[in-house]
Picture 1 (cartoon, rainbow, N blue to C red):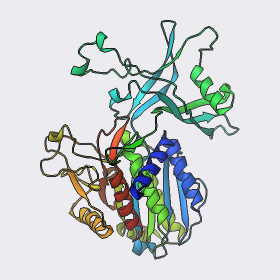
Picture 2 (spheres, protein in one colour; picture 1 turned 30 degrees about the vertical axis):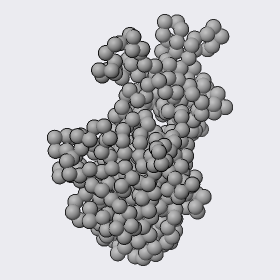
Picture 3 (cartoon, rainbow, N blue to C red; picture 1 turned 180 degrees about the vertical axis):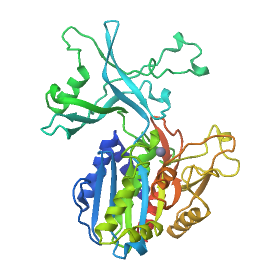
Picture 4 (cartoon, rainbow, N blue to C red; picture 1 turned 120 degrees about the horizontal axis):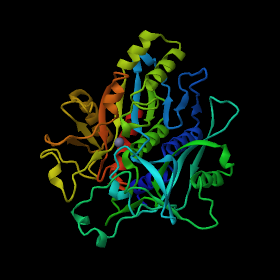
Length: 433
Ligand SMILES: [Zn+2]
């Protein structure tokens, strides 16, 4: 297997094991632990030293890993890559069971972010997330992770015979049309509270112990490599676990340098980032401050460190679509497997400017990685990302980049095998500076 195919398979495996933000962060935590990174608790006093490797998590769904440089932090600054752990989809509502005509049980859900709804239909789905259970401390419940590794439900389509206009486009109602079918009702089943009982059974705990849950649907089937020459990746959640994974692999593959390397994986990008574990919160600024102060430096040194830093805000980008190429800018046309994409927006939804764009182009050139540029068609409104939200909290020079893909926010997205290898290479070069 080629090196880039092997790296693509690593990504697919990581995403398959990470069906919720909590699982993604926990899998990153495991890899960091194995690599000798020491976990710091946000609530406890930190001890950090030059050359040390550390990480901390927020809410179990955001993670910040850093390797402290051997130089003076106010002169060398932070080399940062940020990405996000969350993906659009469906969260299970409280009291989710709905009986249908005495025969079916379906679950009540709420849409999270902006998924392409129709891609979620007719696919075997299951549930994953965090379960909060009673503990002796009323302010700190115990948290358990649940991931049920078998097909549990489907959101069924309506037959074409019952809607002959289906191929002309169907407006799907989030409350009515998108509820997954979980079960038939049988005489022996205890249908009340059956989801909590299922989770309790999976976790081998009493159902009464479960007080609350943050659980989402996920597609059960694993991603794969496809194409005549095995050049594409088909997987859920490439946006943005592909960037989180590439950042992690880069961080794990570099040794100590004078500069401090940091990987910041935020939650809640898909709903605007303004949560305590999102890029719109002060969490990153506070972490940078603690690092600098715990190295025995002052506020002046913190400010100098911030202004000596550079951030790559890494979130996936749109490749020119093979069937609908007219949706893209006429002169900037990113293609799959032609390298990471620098995202540019005159009105600064992307942070890239001539300065930070030049830095990323130079990084790519030096790392021998091709790169491309993305600008929206001027008559289309694009998405937003982490970079400009994060700079509202910490004003670091930042570039927005991401790998090109199709079907962003589909339950199953398409990216490139070579692009994954390219972005790992340029991230590794960046962290190794
Ligand atoms: Zn994204």
